Length: 94
Image (cartoon, rainbow, N blue to C red; front, side, top):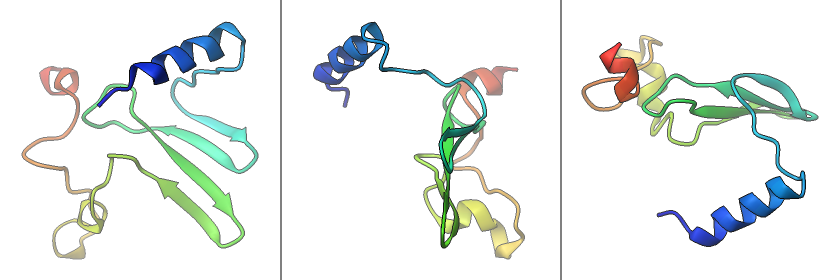
């Protein structure tokens, strides 16, 4: 659920030049934090890669709900889409 106060906060940050929108892929948004475009159910969906001392971690949001989405059927290593389809409605129409 969208909180209207969050929209107001984001608008104020934009007016005060404290907000940077990122489109597509971008390395080192902050040191060790990288944004990647993820084709998924929402147009413009992104995920974050974090480089930590223990290795690289992905913050997937709603790109991945379980390990099965990543490892596929029978651990084949192929992405397993959620539900019956993959991609945004726009991607599906294309």
